[in-house]
Length: 139
Image (cartoon, rainbow, N blue to C red):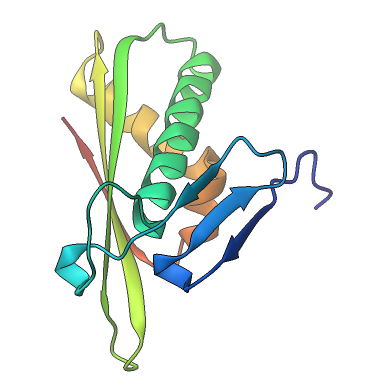
């Protein structure tokens, strides 16, 4: 695959309690380990939030593309992605994701078809397929 766009960011400091900055400077902020994981939490983001935000935006675009391909007009849509982190069976850590799509103005079978098609189109879904547990649902 030839990349048509490449994003680049650098992490410095103490990993999850460090700092991240994109090469263009648009992203430039500190990170903090969530309280649930034994960290300070507070007003800083973490890698799971960043992953959830990117996945949600990408999946929402894929949902819109799926609708265009199916010649379905969508109004008032949203995608929420919850990303969980926890211990895996190998003694390390793994991720899981739950994708919840709000697809108004179409019947449930059409909404489910669009959701499934979006899951095939989305680069994040393709990257995670077979690697993490991903659950799809309609709101």
